[in-house]
Length: 114
Image (cartoon, rainbow, N blue to C red; front, side, top):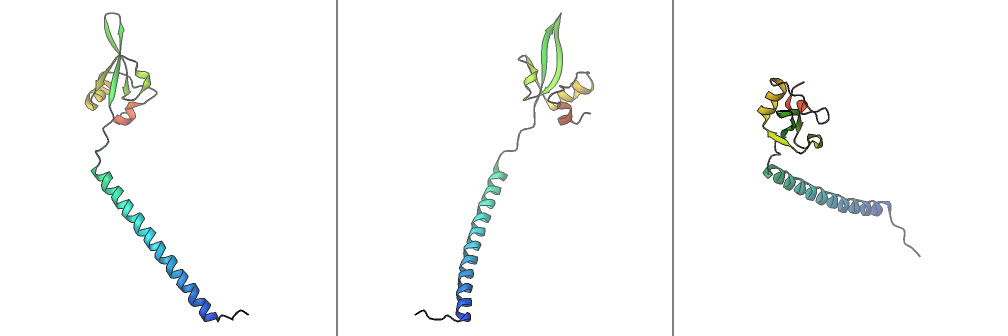
């Protein structure tokens, strides 16, 4: 026949099981913290993301090249004939030279010109 286990013995068994589970949880937490710390170190060593580039689409019209809108570097609407611009050049083109911003990629938002 089966022996009767006292309530105290059962509680001791449950406590031992809970202690083992807590140890496993602590090990998992420590492992995840190590991984996150290593990822943070790798991220801090990574090169900063490059500043977005800009380009000016140039089309041949009449006597010489006429500018189309200023585009973001990854805009597909710029066409094949483009001139790469620095931030200052793109700002000058939009604010002083009267060149329009591309309505699709909106480089004026990245440049802070509204």
